[in-house]
Image 1 (cartoon, rainbow, N blue to C red):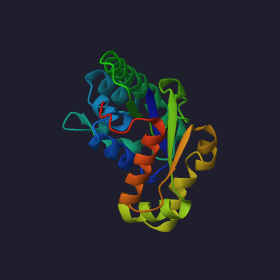
Image 2: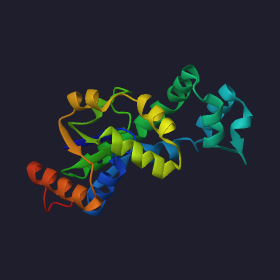
Image 3: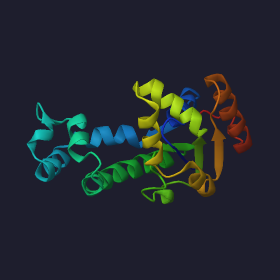
Length: 199
């Protein structure tokens, strides 16, 4: 089974995937793949043709400069997605097929923007990692050393968790400690009958 993990900002997607990885499950993380894709020569070429060479540092795309270039410009953000998403999806699909060929019983794919980019077709089932708005805000402030207004603006810019809850097969509410989250992940695996299977 291919399990797609998604969520909102600061809900704990990475924490859940880390727990699963520690247990021996294979993880395909689209955020990590995107950082690999942005280093590909053909992607660098397309991005510089679109946004200019000022986004480069020592010949590589500087993610911070790229973010500043497209800041709050939806058309430019969409253009980046048009350039990068096909390669990210292709590599993800190749990794999924490779693991399927190895007869892996549970393949985990972390897809932060699963619903926004309409990638539901990549997964057999979808697990949403959710958290209260207060907990998200608190985590963003702590993690990014920012203020409450900026944190809430980031949350408001995303698809609501309530909407994602309606679209998901499973939900883990992550409002507590890491040990509590680990217990919830174990319970979730128990319900899937995957306990003890580190393949």
